[in-house]
Every structure is written in C-alpha cells, then in structure tokens.
Image (cartoon, rainbow, N blue to C red):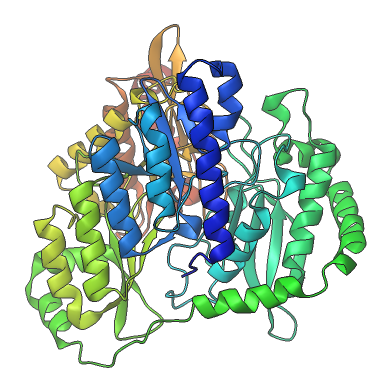
Length: 556
C-alpha cells in the first residue's frame, strides 16, 4: 500500500495546524458557527444530531494493522470506544468534543491518515473494489490508479468549490464490487482491442433524491489518459453544473439536462485541449505508485487443515461458505469479517475488535486490511492452512458471524439515531430484521439477498440498489418506510422499483418477512436467488405478499 513521503507528511501536518487554529477561534467565539462551518467541512467535521462527527478517509478501502490500531486508540481516547465504517470506505467517530478534534487529526497524521475532502463540494475519497489485488477475476489491481486519482484530486485548485460533492469509484474487474455505476465518475477496467488494459468510463451516476445509473461516456480509455480525461470531465461539470439549486447540482442532473451526447462532445473537446499539457509525469508517478502495491510474498504450503475442518466442522463450513472468496492464488482465500452480528449495529466495530482484526492481519494476512462499501472488513490474503486458527480467533472476538451476502448482512446508514438530516431510524430496523431471520433459521436457505436501508432520501444506505431497499421517511411526524425491489449495484446495475404505500415502524419487519416467504414459495429451485426470481416474475407476486388486504379486497 501507499506510504506518505515527505511532501505528504508536511502537507497533512500543515492542515492539522491550520485547522487547530480555526477550532481555537471557534471555541473562543472569534468565529461564529456559520463562519466555522465551511472550514470544518473541509476537514471532515460534521455537526450531527447530538454531537460533532469526524469522518476519516480510508483511501480505496486499504489500511494496515498499525493504522487500524490507531483508529482503536482514537476511539477509546476521544470517542466512546467504537467507530462506524461507512459505504464510502471511511470511518466515522460519532461523539468527539470539538476541543479534541485537533488531537485526533494529529494522531491520524502520525499513521499517514487524515480527514481532508471527506466532506464539502469537492472530490471525495476515491473508492475501489475491496478485493483489489487478490480477486481471481481481476484484470489488474485498480488501487494504483485510485491512488493516482487521490493525489491528483487532493487540494486540486480548480476543484475545491464544485457545484456539489463529487465521487469517483474504480474497479479492476469486469464484475463490479465497487458500485461504479452509482458514482459521478465510474471507472471499470476492461481490455482493449489488443488485450491491453483500459477503462470503460461512466459519468452521471448517483443515488439520493434523484437516483440515476451512470452512462458510458467513453467505451475505452487507455490507462495513460486517465488523469487528463477525468480532469476534462470535472472541468466540464465545473462549468455547466448548476449552482442555483443544490438539489440539482450533482453531475447526474447536468448530464440529464444537457444530454449525454453533448456532455461527451464537450468532454472530448476539453480532453483534446488539456491532453498535451500532460507530459508523462503522471505516468512516472504511476510507476512509483505501482511499486508500493507489489503483491505480498505468497507462501507455498499444504492446505489440508482447511480441507479437514471444512469436511468435519459444520460451524466452520457455514462460515467458509459465506465469508470466504476465491483468491487468485489457489492456496489462499479472501476473508470477509462480518460487522453484522445479528442484532448489532451494521458497520460498527469496538476498539478491541479493531485491535483483534489488526493482530490477525499481521499474523495471517500479510499486514493488510480492507474496508468494503458493504461495511465489513476484509483480510485479502490468508493462506488456507491458517483459516481454521483465524476463524477460531474471530469467534472468540465475536467477529465470526457467518452471514456475508445473506439477509442479515444489511447496509444501513446511521439514520435518526445520529444524523441531523435523517427522517427515520435505520439501525433498529436493520437489527430487528437480522434478529428475526436468525430466529427463523432461514437465512442460509434464502441465500444471497442484499437489503439496504436509508434513513432519509439522501440514500447513504444505498437503498435504491438493494435487492430489497428500505427508505425511511417522515409522514406527518410518523416514521414511514417505503420498499423498493429489484435494485442491483453490480455491473448489471438498476434502480429498484417502488412497490406501493409505506409501512409504519412496527409493520416493516413483518412486511419483509412476508416478502421473503413469498420468494421462497415462488422460486423455481433452491439455487434461484431472490433477484433472479424477481426478474423472472416481476413485481406482481411480491406486491400481493406485501399488501394481502388489498389483494383480498380486489378478489371480493
């Protein structure tokens, strides 16, 4: 992974010192809250429902054990002993005191981390496939490109005051695990006519109050053109993007109102103008970055221990079936650690759990961890002979839940328990759904099913691309939960379809239970997933299950 050089170190320390002075001025009253707001947002500090919240960037989801231990230290020293991993591969601390934030930022700088551009109308944390560098379907590790984009975009003078926030995601696999089609710029690595790697470039994706799937603006972009082409897109957006209405300021609206063909024409024209100004220094930098992402020294050893445990231990086998993914090295596996224990808050990890994960990555995982957009933690390189010992340690730390990709592996935003923008609770709904299906002992029979929950129309829980999406709204002071079906965040991305009227807080879990039982009754065979069944049958049988009274009335 990338390590700070002298320039990075000096840059981040300078920002910490600058913001420390701004915090002091806010505390002594020299700055009003309105004056302080843009300054704190530039440094990842939000004012939530009950307290400040500090959002820390984990670039492209990659983190080492030393950094994870520092996050644990920060959680214990200046927060309430835990952190919340987000769908943007960040971590949030929900309870810091304003006076302590400079010390937190200084502690982050000690391990090569920061909170710069985790907020504001600028280019946010560049995200990527959490299996990058390990997946067996990968064309090339996308993280060097993500790091190149991070360095280019950090404090870029032209893009610090965009019409609205801007998000970039990159994947090195034809199978999209980074939700690239829901980003302002999505970069999906493909092969060109001569087999060379390049990118399919999408623009104008995004969720929120106007969900849209990104559209292809360039079928194939050579990797050498990545920075100038992205700069061309940002430059066109910065010129055309609306500043009169923040709800229509995202690039997806710009693409929709201007038209893809015209956007493409302007981007290509701008690209032609600026491409000659890139003299190859970016490619030299990319080569240096690539060296930092060299694969670990994989060891060659028997895998009998994993095979024996898999054959004889049903608890281990259940975990292996859900939480392990094929590695490009057949002797290795990718391990996903679920932060979705039944009844727990999705994405939360205690300081002790962070230290356990750091220790395990150090002992078994070549000193590397990843954060997924699905709010789980990954150890990407684990030799199969070490898997039984790792599983036992995870169980002891209450991190051995075997549910990755199942109905209880729910994405949920903080909702009204924390967020000042939320209109309904998300966390209790996720907890109750997970607990209910654990009681029913159905989730392994149900198979792959992605539930995503948002506590407001901003869609931080990605509900639009959930197989089952739940959106919490306020209806005359009462929580009301709308359901969408058939969403998909992969390479076949689609926005889910709203089913009908919403459900009250105490009705939403029974509604999900009826929905899932309808799927079990309607699937053609046990291997047919919820999404496949929905695509085959359409909305009809699921709507009938959700609103049985309406169906009975129609029949009468």
